[in-house]
Image (tube, rainbow, N blue to C red; front, top):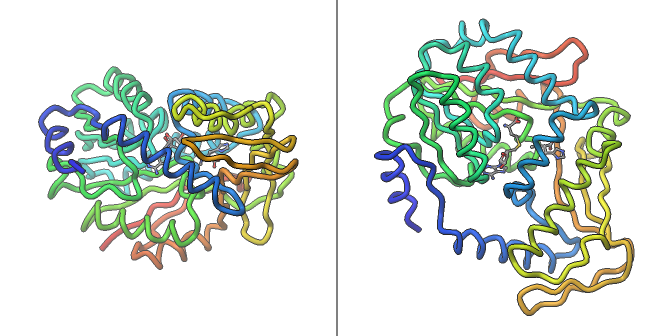
Length: 330
Ligand code: SAH
Ligand code: AVI
């Protein structure tokens, strides 16, 4: 694939570049066919984020029950000066899964030496909107958006080379990876960011399931709509035959793995047809759509160390809901 061509063009234009629509659709179709054929059935959570899915995620972040965004934003606002004291000479901010970049603005306000921002996200429309929103607020900031899967991106644009970089991975998106995937990702980010860099990672803490469950099953049904949008997307983009109303959202806490799990549950016996294949669902049969792992501060630090990072600081709110870790590379 023309990844390097995309990146060199990005280098010249600063535009957000994406693989062709066809390549993206084929990758989506392959993942859905494989995921529905598997038992138990599962779909990768990165496909939640089409334009509608990203909008619904933003709505989730405004919900009373969904504390992570509110608490992490407050941590960034309260500790900006301390973050700057640790990493204030960084010139390039590289964000993984940047979404709306609302939290980024707080970080940029604290980090005076940052002149280049590289947001990486699979949600193309959202990247473009976020870039114009940030451009209006941060004069002279150069933005190099990359439409890419952050787990497999090969290199950063040339403009980041030999400059001091701070990585940012907010929202506890790292919790959507398994422990092994998170370790592989952290090691991959260390290679991308390079020597003398640091990484600021937002991680949701383990807590009472009575707080977690409503956060993933809110009273207004926004999380349900976010989960079900994956089926709407499959129907819309892949021309699948699916009765979306024949599925329901479910969210449970798995104590053993320390994670929230989301499912789409078939409300009846039914068939789903896609690209010449038929999938038979029993009444009550589930499709697993997302894990959200929760970590104690010590568990996350041990994971980061096993990936080659040195834990430097951790900030936690007084209710012990969310943690913000600063990791360093020698
Ligand atoms: N960081 C933001 C957004 C979190 S939502 C915040 O804290 O509010 C997760 C974001 O990661 C979405 O914007 C989604 O499109 C993106 N994303 C999820 N999986 C991804 C992947 N594998 N590669 C790149 N972006 C991904
Ligand atoms: C993006 N990610 C960290 C969110 C989470 O909490 O796992 C996605 C989400 N799923 C349901 N609500 C929000």
